Length: 275
Image 1 (cartoon, rainbow, N blue to C red):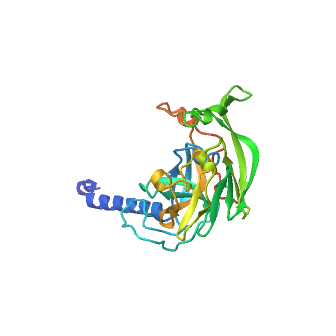
Image 2 (cartoon, one colour):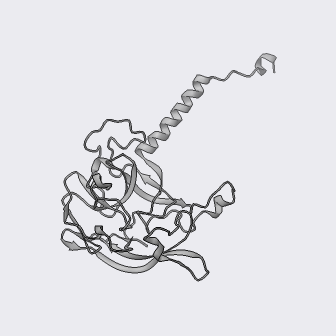
Image 3 (cartoon, rainbow, N blue to C red):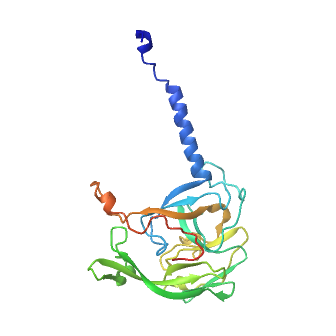
């Protein structure tokens, strides 16, 4: 090999920058149009979703709106492209009408539905939705589930092995379609009783499965709730969990493994019935 051939070619920084730009564009395209990861930061969807769950949200089931891109760069506009309404019972990621931050809730009412709460029981279109007491939800106490709030603390106990757990009263709710899921009802709250609320055209009604700890469509947006959510604010449908962390990770790599919750891998979130 000649000395000239052995000389290393200089880096083409323009080409490298272009390749990086295309990679970023592809990632944003997938996030905006196909699917994106999501992290559960609060307990509003207990027991279905735990704080620390990671999951995948598909972007296409409900079509696309100006809020679909991962970067909020589009001007506000009504409607959706290829828009479809969610099904009652879907777990959906949405953008808050107040500040465009992400929330995750369950779709309860569609346009034209009448939704009401009576003594903690959901009523849909004038009929009570089945609510049956099932086995308590038992969650080991951890940094992500400390069971120390004024409501949760009354349910803190220990299991047979002496491990601190939160043992929460749980109910199975079954919609007229047959889709069912688990909810928590921890105490009597003002939101356990509401006036009948008719879902306007172009909106949906959402609730958290943790009925006593969820800022959802039962509350006016001016008071910190979601109100009737415009369909433009639907981001996507939660499909399945990938893994879950209990919040105990630190700089020690061993904790990256010990913090993993068993049994929280690849759980389907929009099955016809809850397990």
